[in-house]
Length: 355
Image (cartoon, rainbow, N blue to C red; front, side, top):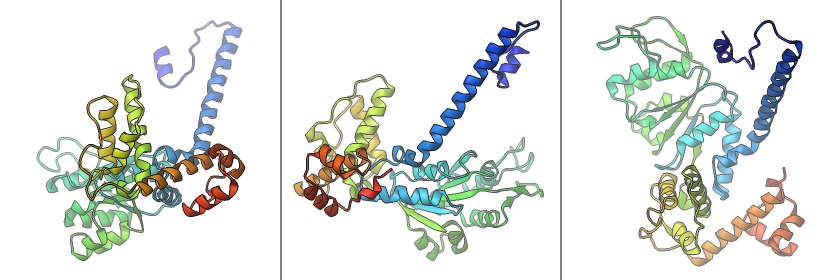
């Protein structure tokens, strides 16, 4: 009985006969635990608005815009298409759209449409009853039903066969589905997020994606900038991934040299953040030196690297000062006129940092 009570969430178990003081102590501990849980919930709620900066990392203008768009769209129920190159973090953006939405308490269900065989697509998405086909020994809940009241993330949506697109469209329109070999309607209240590395509008025009499904899925669109468009974020991302890997395996994080940072910034990173993360983890384990591949198109001009570094320093100071110009001047040791000129040149506004 005691084990079952604790499994069901009991804070303590008191055997009869009990001393009143023992009961009072147990209630006091339970109250303390409850207050702690409530405090943690409040802290999590307060951190939500800024928590996205710990997920979508970067100080570049492109990442700032992306974070604002994600938070704006997360507060709405609309379906979203996420465009980005391979390794740019499309699923991470989808997870943020879910985590900061009112569906966050329900499931986030990810499906890679490019790896599901055509013959298994309907069973995977819509589920089946026992005996629906050879080998279907028991009922199976499909991905769409599993995502009920939550978020469904469809990666590589352009790879879904047209027959599956028709059924998916009907589910999204009617907000219900039927498992294979069943006539019973099952509710499917879900928000759909799609990701693609190709232009879905072009795919629809070419007949590889149903036009009506595209308009159902693409109420809003997000574009993730590749690393080559936000090179100032590369050292920050590299240090973040390398630091996490070192900490997870009990290693000391080695400092990044100026030459290493230069190599990182100049490397083309065709695999985007996925490639960068892999290189950072290798660096944390001392396996090799990242950024050693030849740079396509030659190195970035020195002035571009200096400006990116300077803009990042000013951004960090403004964030630390929470938009207080006087404090930022002190941190950077710059006169007001110089700071104002540099903020104007780099498109920085103090209002973006006021909390």
